Image (cartoon, rainbow, N blue to C red; front, top):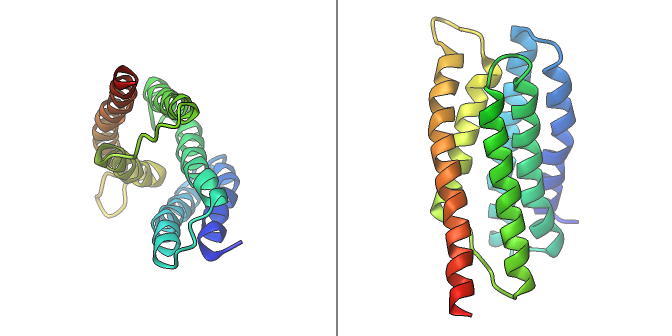
Length: 179
């Protein structure tokens, strides 16, 4: 166990807390969920930073980090559906992309091919997080329409979700053609 893995595990641990907060649909619990989600997204950056900076990249971290990211985003988006804050079909597309990319990476790994994360995947993650935070807040505060801002960024996130998913699949196909 090292600091990078501890941060990743903390990100996983916060998922059920955010889910429970979303059972209580009011401004206070929405703000608390948004703050916890924001803290979790910061740990995503920090765990990678510490792992590289301190040269403590581990197999456990390589396994848990993407799992934590997917659990966090998928759980929160699923919890926002019954609250009417996100369309179910967008959540389904985002989760389907994650499953497809995980499957493609697994098939590539079986052939000892590494498909590296691209800048598209980083944009996808950034826009998903940027969308989720105001969608969690939801309620207007001081005239700011958080729900509308979240919906705007969700459309951008959907665009990068589809583009990056296609990019992973195309990279896998290119690698197989070369083989």
